[in-house]
Image (cartoon, rainbow, N blue to C red; front, top):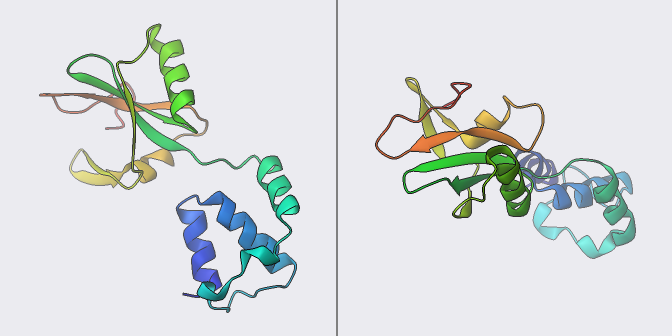
Length: 148
């Protein structure tokens, strides 16, 4: 796999730390986009510079979390961490969830006659944390925005 392919995958799958390392090594001309990605030595990077880039760029990974509302209902929330999802749920519903689990962004769900992933659905939101939707066992999934 070439560095350019790995870099694209990092951006697509929000692997921000590795994307920053690759960007830094490319900017310092220690690797090129045509290099074999399996031969990359991350120890050639200035770890302090990369850490500052990660801290200052404002780009943070957002995941999807399922928060159990009661025995049959679940809210799905986009957040940067489990703690943020729980805080947002508690603020939104004035109660704590029964549990909270992260789901893969590539999990498929149906909407209307189509299939999409949580990653696809995330593109419809402008800010996070955000409620993606609700699921009630025994019912067709829906939410106030009609997203799924």
